[in-house]
Amino acid sequence: MKQIVKDSSVLTAVSIGEMFMRFIRTKAIALILGPEGTGFLAQLAILFEALRVWGDLGSRRGVIKQVAEQRFSGNASPRYREVVKASFFLAILSSVLLGTLVAIFSGTLSRLLYGDSSHYRFIIFLAFLLPAASLSTVTASIVKGNLDYLSFAKYSLGAFAAVILCTPFLIYFFKIEGAVLTMGLFFIFPFFAYLFLNAKKKFLHFAPGINFRALREQFSQGFVQIYQDTLVHFVRISIAAWIVHAMGLSMMGIYQVVLTFSTVYMNIPLHALSGYVLPTIARAQENREINLAINESIRFLLFILVPIVVIVIVIPEFLISFFFSREFLPAVPVLQVQVFSTLFILMSYSYTTALASKGKLKLVFIISTTQTSLFFAVVGILFPKWKLMGIAIAYCISSLTNCLMHYGYARHYFGTRLLPKNVKLVAMSMIWAASAYVGVTFFDHLATRIFLLGLGFFWFFISSKDHEREFVFNKLSYYLGRLTKPKVPGTV
Image (cartoon, rainbow, N blue to C red; front, side, top):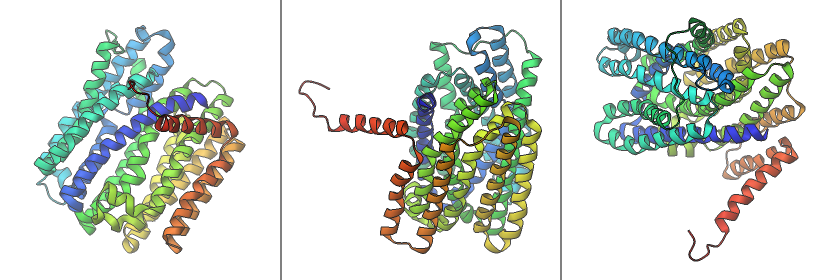
């Protein structure tokens, strides 16, 4: 547990930096461009995230796994070089081909997203950005696969700081165009940062030719990710198109608030932790090791993110006003419902990683297809009458189904079970989140909200073990001591 806390804390710091970078962009867009501008840019962001799935053919998962497996043989070994060469080859080939197709059909994509073809030039920009984004993602995966978390954090955070400095000025002076440009900086600056890291501590070693065995392995690992993510983004693009065509760009801007909190911000720590969970499970040879890796990662994720989920449920008005503006407050009831889906996503994440990394690809296809089909079915029933609330309910139902299926298959093939300490943690997390929702829905007073947030101390003491409480208290004592310690004259 100590090792996963140490390594994951470094990755979480990167996640916090990325969240802050996105917050600055989101806040600037909300204040300067309003709900309609937010809705317009949300369509571009959803499309670009879907393109990124195919931009590197999902090789980021295979890259982390393969690099982690070759780490002990040295990053200049022939096998390591083949992995790096294959990953860059896949990223460049697929992103250039896909970007060309996107540019050709930019008018059609514009009509799909907005109802007319006049915004094609923004989509062409995304086509040109795709290769840089794919190379940035693959390079970051290689750094994480080497388990060089400190270097990854240092250079990533430096790149994020540069983006943060540029963002407000670009959006203020160039409006929509400036906001789209900052989307590109999110990938361009980190890519150059990783290249600078490589110049100081070389980790990019290329084989003289393409090893098709390494290429095939990356593609097979990536195809699972492609299939899963393609379904997810197909759902998001479809839902966004329905909202825009039926309710307008402003309502899409309102729903983007829900997506930002329940998927974008919550998924950043998940993606960061993948750099630890995936190589750990990939190296595990016995079911006992797999079970331990799954349980420890679930425990870490729940302790980090359950309090955030409850805070979103209890004080959504403050968060929406802070991250966006008061114009977006109609998103409150929808957000409170949809954020529940995050709890189920947290618990299923480690299980799906185990199934994919151990070659249970058919199961991943079955689960992903079932979840997507169920989601569309529920949305089709609820959206005509309940609009955005119907979508939020559908997310919760499909996410719960996804979690139960992953758990069932992992238990069948790996004998995976929740450890007793995690059973208590999961139960207490569900009780706390459900109490928060019921409390603010039926007994909405300031005292109620303070009480519900205060339940977090009770949740932590019941769910944690003695060594975990000691670890947290020692950290708190250390930082409080540094804050309250009187400065000695002549010291810095």
